[in-house]
Image (cartoon, rainbow, N blue to C red; front, side, top):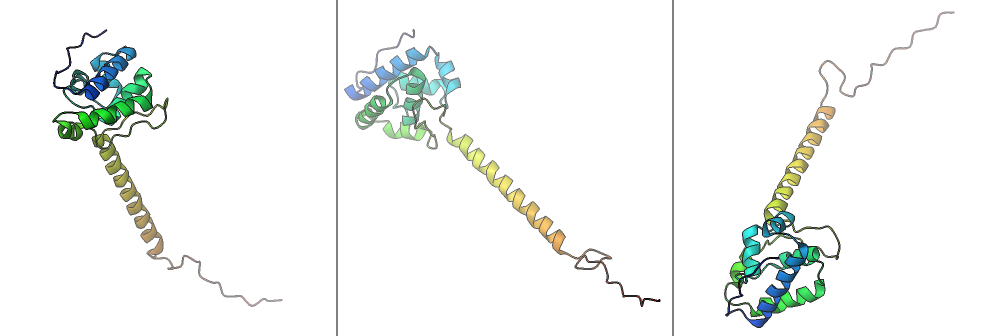
Length: 168
């Protein structure tokens, strides 16, 4: 079990309670900070700041730790909202540090992990590039199909044969 440093004396009671609950959940996971970083979208140093009371953890970080530690989601989110209101200066810094595009799980027990903004942004660009390439390929194929072929008839039909008079 990790030995934690005492929380800052300036930390309000609501924030202190949230950090204590997060520490308990982290202890239940049996993971080190590095292990927690590998299992989530948040770095080891970010977890250190969140669990030492230096920064308000993003909502997604609290949710994923709750899932990993088997905690009560509704209770933890209520604690997080109270802590957010009471958190001393630096809340805006922690919000900027939060992963804005993170998708935290909505259903307890689901395997969803928060996806960092950078990763989802890269995925969007990759998807857009693929779609643009597909459209370009379809347009090129369509133009080649519509253009007349050299040496052939524009409508690709064989020429009509004249009927030969039948000789009896």
